[in-house]
Image 1 (cartoon, rainbow, N blue to C red):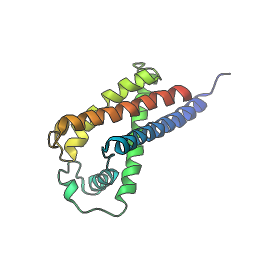
Image 2: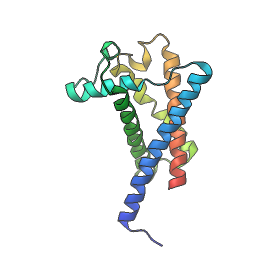
Image 3: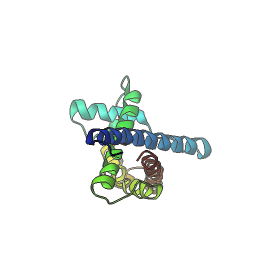
Image 4: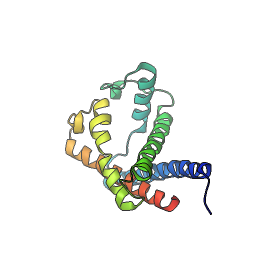
Length: 168
């Protein structure tokens, strides 16, 4: 049975949202496991919420003093929401690479490739935006910070590829 264009679009939207959520959840579980086993703190979604709030309301996309700014009510919740919305955004990008550009497939292997390549975003955008410098040069352990970001994105991408492969 052939699906209509509308049915295919609805399935794609559901798959994109689901894959983005699954990938974020896998990354969160990975970070929690690192925290419990080797005492590496998970991402601070409160800072992400604070950064998002000031980015939207004040146009402060680059905010190197974000850690020193007072906490905002609801910033942790906002940070979690932003985290999952960004995950869905990444799922859109992965879907485009598979469905429109045929550069990848829906698989754990291609998801891993996507995840590792997506590490460029925290290294070259998010870390500098938070005052940590390109490739985390403003942190005490830049190599460790970059490796942790890459590993989290590798888990994220692998989970996304596997989720899409099951939903496709």
